Length: 348
Image (cartoon, rainbow, N blue to C red; front, side, top):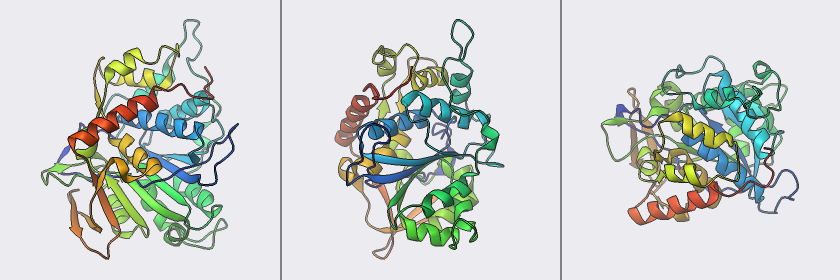
């Protein structure tokens, strides 16, 4: 998500709810492990790469079970970079779903995913290993959602969406099929307990948030029709918490070549600090609301121009997060501590 590219008028932001999950290789799942599906526009804004790093660290500690990763950026390098990251962090078996005929965003910013995928060693070999051979054969994300959700216990899955709403809207519209006798909306209502998004803006009516305006019809549908609780982390939260470029330069000496670090370095001229929009959604989903303030219950409306409007309603199930300066500083320190930790299973 390219949060520095605001479309004046309004932003919708996504917060997340607490969610944990099980370790997928050598560490057994804890009884409280929760199941997560990550939805990302990987390749647009580099905060997606930082957020994905956090996901792997939670996998390492057994806090989450990552059922799959869906990309809503229509670019071959989005899926390839996800494969690179899965492989490097030691989780090559995590399923990836892709989008076809998605929002046009390929030229919105430097595609750091492409830069990292094309990076070569001195001998001309790719800098990072892959586990998949043909990314065009990956399943459509909305269909992979159906498969993964149908296999899970009722009310057990948290979806973290830190990109466009396209895949989620398509999921809601899916009919019953061989995977499940339920429609997409029925399947979500039965299997998903929480949708946590990074989207919108609630403190400035003159700003449009990138994730919303790139597919306004999909955002309108999801915020209006998603049948379970939805918590969003808006633009104003992530922009208040900047990941330090000095950490990228100094805290990863243990890895000669690191796919997240190389992506960060390629996105803008170093050193630069980057807002942590997507990271806040992951933090809220996995570790709960204690780092944040959360709005009262209400409804969120997406206007025809892409603005987001919150109306308090005790019968509503939409919420958004805020932070004060003390919370922002505490969250930044926590991000640096978590992201600079050496992964347990990384495959250099």
